[in-house]
Picture 1 (cartoon, protein in one colour):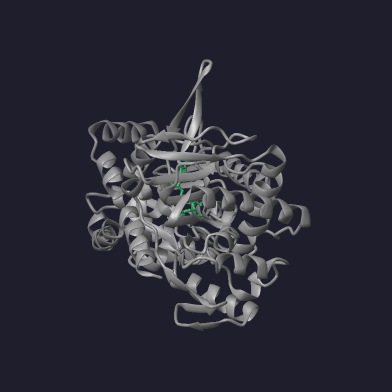
Picture 2: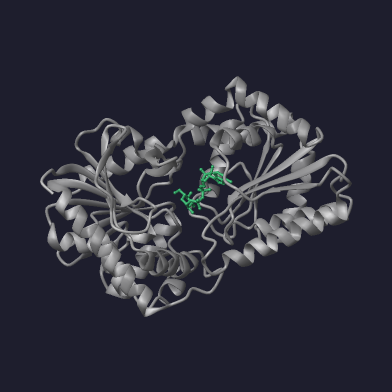
Amino acid sequence: MDQKWNFVVAANRLPVRRVWEGDTARWVPSPGGLVSALRPVMSGNPDAVWVGWSGIPGAGAEPFETDGFQCHPVGISQGEIQQFYEGFSNATLWPLFHDALVPPEYHRTWWDAYRTVNQRYATTVAELSQPGATVWIHDYHLQLVPGMLRQVRPDLRIGFFLHIPFPARELYIRLPWRTEIINGLLGADLIGLQTPLGVHNFCRSVTRITGAKTTGKVIEHDRMTTQVEAFPIGIDVNRVVGLATDPTVRTRAAEIRRTLGSPTTVLLGVDRLDYTKGIEVRLRAFRELLAEGRLPVDHCVLVQIAEPSRSRVTGYTEVRQAVEQQVGDVNGNFGVMGRPVVHYLHRSHPIEELVAMYLIADVMLVTPLRDGMNLVAKEYVACRTDNSGVLVLSEFTGAAQELRTAELINPHDIEGLKTTMEAAAHRSDTDAEPAMRAMRRVVRTNTAQRWAERFLTRLGKLR
Ligand code: ADQ
């Protein structure tokens, strides 16, 4: 590898995915918050490279250019997908960092694969980086990379951002490899978390595990310092608002509402099908409200869009079965011929279709048991250009720290959730307006692009 770059992003996935048309393959941009957030700093930047997995098992493909910057695929074998990705990343770290909602599994072979893949990323980044380059590493799949990189390239300016929550110390210290992960993260000059609570939890774990001195957000260790701060992620507001005001999308929204039987109230959930998202909780609350006659069966519809996700990981088949059983139960008991009360779509949707759904949703249900941020809540708010609509939002999302005028709920308190959902369904647009207006200000100010800019400016000032 001869060419070197001055700005290197490393993430589990590349910002593009391969699609086949007949026998020819081409790379198309993957949708996603991270890609839009980094577009302004990556697009057309000849000094930037993105290191990540292509999504296809096997050896890494040749590097290529997309949108004016370089992509460098990292190879991940079928066995590593099982042990590094589905295993350690998604059956150990993901549940542990989400309050152990399902029991995390600890397997030494998974840990070995996690270390191996992280080492591969670190080696690749080290080879691609110019002297003194800025490196930005993303998320829980790559927590060892900062430390591994620091050992071979002390000259680099290293930033790390964790997209999921950092758990309470009492949970974190269960991890058999807690010291290795903390030491891996401490290789970074700057660690970004979604919320101040994440920062607090992380610093407490560091103190307990390493004995390092933490002063406010500064951790001193091994003759270097690491800064830890909250950088709540945002969305690409211009793109979402552009779609929300697009006549084609608006026509589609009206069409969907008609297809649903022009109900008085549409309630909506949009999530990856994941046990952290609290989909069962909202279905249960909805069912009880119908049964108690507190929501009118004839005038209310719940649409639940669930993107298929990690179907081979423990906990995901179970959540799917539970959700589908509940949907069947509600429709079996309350639906009439040709008119179900819950419309459940277990598939991915293009953003245009999601925006059309956000436009018809009078009540948006975001009820995770734990979530780093939750971009769906922000997308909904961004779409409500007329300031109508009610956002019911779990206190246990990062978004709840910013969207203070949402209808905040505790997803463990089913009666509280029911009362909030009932009131939300009956709220007039005029009553809902001040809260939505305030949330729209927040979402418009703290965009994805602003988030990236804030993180990189902060990183640029260190060392
Ligand atoms: P996720 O857990 O994936 O992200 P979220 O923040 O809500 O959760 O982002 C999901 C994205 O996928 C949204 O942009 C949404 O539009 C899209 N999406 C959801 N359902 C879809 C469907 N059926 N079809 C197509 N697209 C769909 C992780 C963390 C979050 C954190 C983000 C960003 O778990 O807490 O907010 O990263 O840091």
